[in-house]
Image: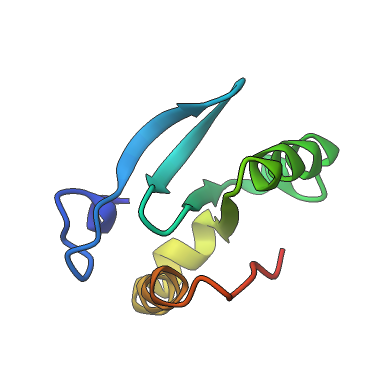
Length: 95
């Protein structure tokens, strides 16, 4: 997601393809302890993702997941959601 590179999104610093334990996170905002994952259909109802998210949560991260289609169809809403989660660390992901 091009918007998360080079502080383009509200000047928020994200790193791409970050190793965390035995996993690789798509995008990480270390300051907000937020991981953003962009998922294809292979992730639908994935037990592996549930285990992965639980381990990342145990390490103090929130994992915010978006479908590829969401990014393609309504990028502005995805970006607004990410900004909100960075700004309010009490928000918890919905999926």
